[in-house]
Length: 241
Image (cartoon, rainbow, N blue to C red):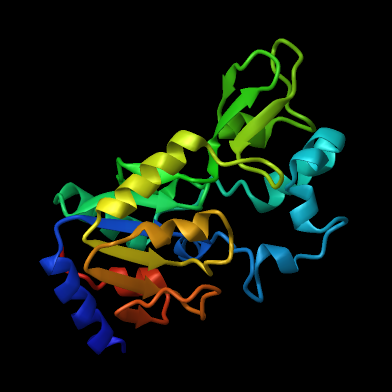
């Protein structure tokens, strides 16, 4: 299955020297982490408040205990392991073909697989800091502590993830856009392309090959020369490095 598409993708990768990968939640679903908008996704979860509201800056400030109950249960998947997509991208980077991963994910699985140049547009669960003194804390600490995690100084600890109502980091944006603009091949995978401003970053691509790998149709027309509607781990796992 997908033999024709995999052969076409293999040819593109073999011909490319400056690949950039732009990925979303669908990259990690094969690692057991739910995405957001699919039928089984996070946004279809029945909870005391809509997930979009819980994951907002104002809700974090007003209801940190409810925020952390949801965050620990639905976001902190610390036992998740990299799948074939993460591993293949790390291999391609090691070979010098892949220049950067631009991800909307916050799970750190690209780094766990071995990727070095990763631009995390929405932050990371593995970075947490006190809002008062800035002291850093691990995701394990946040996961294991009961209730609202507090710093030794008494301040509330906040995950370094971009919540609704917050802006993306300017330096990360600049680095991601620069990498995409310099790429000869852009592979877009596991994203519905409906979350802005991140989805707009692909407009900076001026290279030769644009590839889209996603199980469902996307919310943005990208004019890709190769489109594969399939789980991304299943496809990248069959690529020869």
